[in-house]
Amino acid sequence: MEGASLFPRSEPGTGGKMAAAQSSPVCILVLGMAGSGKTALVQRLTAYLHSKNSPPYVINLDPAVHELPFPANIDIRDTVKYKEVMKQYGLGPNGGIVTSLNLFATRFDQVMKFIEKRQSASQYVLIDTPGQIEVFTWSASGTIITEALASSFPSLVVYVMDTSRSTNPVTFMSNMLYACSILYKTKLPFIVAMNKTDIIDHSFAVEWMQDFEVFQDALSQETSYASNLTRSMSLVLDEFYSSLKVVGVSAVQGTGLEEFFEQVSKAVDEYEREYRPEYERLRKKMERAQSQRQREQLDRLRRDMGPVPMENSSAGSGSVAESESDPSALILTRGTLEEEEDEALESDTDDIDHQVTEESHEEPAFRNFLQEAKQRYPARSSH
Image (cartoon, rainbow, N blue to C red; front, side, top):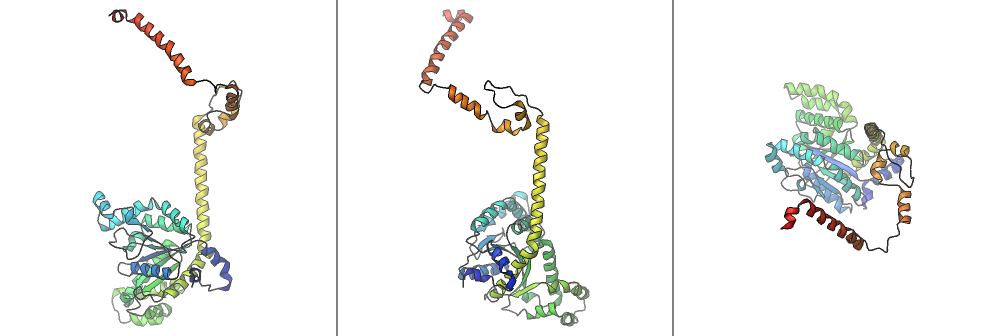
């Protein structure tokens, strides 16, 4: 199966959109709690895409990871030394991760250029994030990186959830609330990847999302305050569940990846239909604001410089009014084209040895200097 077949067309009328989406790489931001199997899933996705002759472009944004189980094209550890950041700024582990991400985000424009160069060779960009999920989702650097990717390429968020730890209704609801907050924070197409289905099947979680009464029955065994809050929140999240893309995967066994990429295909179509127009609008708004700032700065420069008097040259080139109208003409040009042409015509000294000419001028000047020195210092010269 070719790499392009990883984009199954779920709807007949989306062929044009899907073709447009495939012209740019799809950026997949993988988020998840510590221990959810996030990095293991990135490893499995990388191996899967390589087996389909569609090698991804892999980026690691976790500065504190000891070893990566997959080859990374860009690794934040090559740019920022996590332990040095902690030592230099006197930070703890989380503060070191945040600061390392902030430092890396200042050079993320270079990462964007690397992705653009590889967009013809890689259909997917896999981005592994730190295990401390709040460090990325709620930091300024996380927002900068997410918006930079989403403004240039089809982008989506994959929230990796530990299915084996979500069998308790209260824990499950906590995971769903966190997923909901990330969705509204990133404002991007969202997929919940229920990992570790090799330990327990994710069908119970899907049933809880689809059937409110089944979830209430599971909660009936809980009598704590948290269960009452969970019961109330389940009604609030009913609309969130209706549009949520859910897929069960196993990073260990590699199951569920076909369905995963089917959901990715739908998410890309959703991005092209709903998210790209909004990002295009924001991008154009930022460009207009930047252009306006540049015009204002140029106007202030002209006002500060004021009219610049310039003497007319003997060749009579260019009017003073033209020079005063644009201060940049004073910086970019040292003379006019007519002056250079006149000088070239008048100068017929190619056959003169300029070194000999300079020496002939230097010799009488030196003699004059010696005579003046003797007149000024007669006492010294007599000795």
